[in-house]
Length: 199
Image (cartoon, rainbow, N blue to C red; front, side):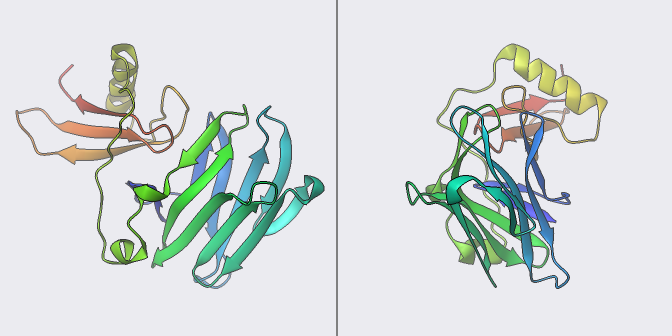
C-alpha cells in the first residue's frame, strides 16, 4: 500500500502507523479492493484508552465518544464532543490511501495533528504529485541526527523518529558531492533533517 500522511508519502507499506512504538492506526483493503478498512485506538489527554475501532466496527467506544463513517471514497472519525475530525482518509488511487487531516492523542496523551493545509486535495493525489516535506518546527538535534544516520546505514528497514517513534520518510536529494544525501522527515512531528552517507 502507498500511504500519504499530510505531505509525506511512503511506498510499499503494510498500512501500519506506529506512534511511540504502538501500532495505533492500521489501514487495510477489504474483500473488494475498493473497500478501505480502518483499525484505530483512541486515547484521551491522560492516555486512557477510550475507544477502539477494528476493521470499521467498534470493539468499544466509551459513551459513544466518537462516530465513524465510511464511503466509496474513504473513511472518517469524528469526536462527538467537539465535532472535530479525528481522522480522515481518502482512497486516491489503486492501492493508495491519503490521510488528509486529523487531531488525536497518542497512547501517552500527546496530541498528534495532521493539518488540512498540508494537503492540496484529491486532484493532486490522483495526478501523482509528490510534495517535499517542510517544517516550521525545530529540526533534529545533532545527537538525534547521528542516531538516524546510524539506523539508516545499518538497516534497510523502517527507521523511527527518535522523538515520537513514528516512521521516518526518506527522499533522495540530488547529489551535490560524491556522497548520497537524503531528506529525512517525521510524518507525525514534522521535523526534517538532511542526512548524508558521509559521517
